[in-house]
Length: 118
Length: 430
Image (cartoon, rainbow over all chains, first blue to last red; front, top):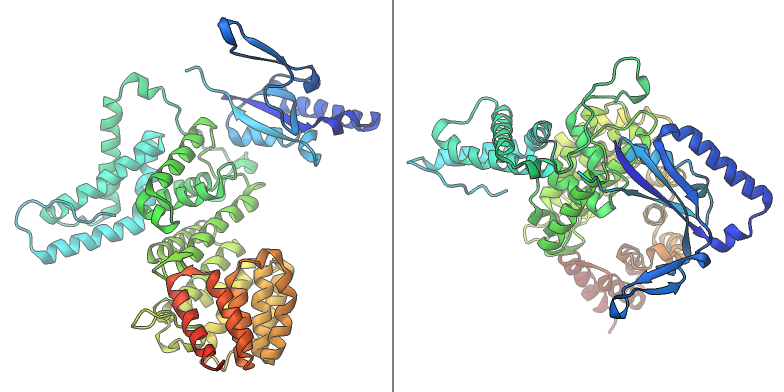
């Protein structure tokens, strides 16, 4: 078994403008995903919008520079994640494929293997 | 591969020649079998590859002295696997902690119908691993040529006109992803199989077309790629004998490859289908391709590759260019367009229309394609227009179209052909 981080990316404006009904459909999709993945879901959650993000980089005099905003400014922002346990990439892909964000045109997910501490 | 191994003792040139031939043949036929048998020991593609390479090198060294074994594949497998066991025993604990290939240790029982592969063969596992959609198409092709066909990294690099170091990096990165992301070494389940098979066929077809007309360079044909693609299709057909696309692709490649020796003149010039010496087409390949085509077309609806093979068969069966059944070809292109819409197929259909109804009709059929963005840099469209314009004696327009085709072609043999045509057309301009 191995761990995979599922990163959910999408257009934040479109997420903001979702109707209550669309929002419910997405929530139901996640509930169905969690039910299907069962014990495979180690953790997961939706993130607050990237406007709430704070980034830290090395600054002068040994203290970090703290700035407002996400580390990378991108059109599609990171909106949520799951940490999954799966036997292999095929299993991780077949689970991730069921996330409602995969079906929407403006969003998608990235499957990243987590390094095995060995 | 390098067939110039060091040979000890006094061995006649004749024996040496026989050994080299036997090793080259075993390389073509058994590379993938030896490699996959070794992967069973190593659970590591790199190490298995190294040991397989060593086994072939050892064959070149020892067979001249000891004789060619009755079963070269079995000999090579034993040597490669023993070498792998030796290396594994010597390996440090640190290296052993590296991630291994994800292999199913337990063979699914008869109850597990959903996950049972159609055929249990390690070569099939390797093909599906190399052509996994999580790998880039470039990497899929490179890995397939390296691991399944046994081409060296330098040979793969030459085929795709990249630096050997670039290709080596691409192959290394892909192999690293296979282990780090745990791409399984497995035949996909029945539910995923059709989609995954079609990805594999795309790779095999690309290898073939790249070998048929090299995109750039001095050679029109890359024999190693053609042979590699046909061997892969044979293997897939052996493993999935009832799949219409697989059967169709093998038929297509055999029917086209039958013309191989007639596509270049003695002086290395391009010989068009219309000018080829049909008596020198490879009858055995045509017969085999036709038989496979009959089987492939039993599938309804007809598969894309089955239809393409049917088109190739119309040419193979015509005793002369003039006897070609253009109406049949146009009809087949029409069906192919419904099955697999593509601007290139539309272009081929328009050419067939022109050959059926005359150059004026051909030009008319080509004209809507001139605005097709996907064909904007496709030299064959310009060349087809140029030919019809030439037949209509519209010399100035023909010359311009040949010039356009030349600007879009990087293969030296094709360039020489187009230059000859351009020169001929220009003589009418004065």
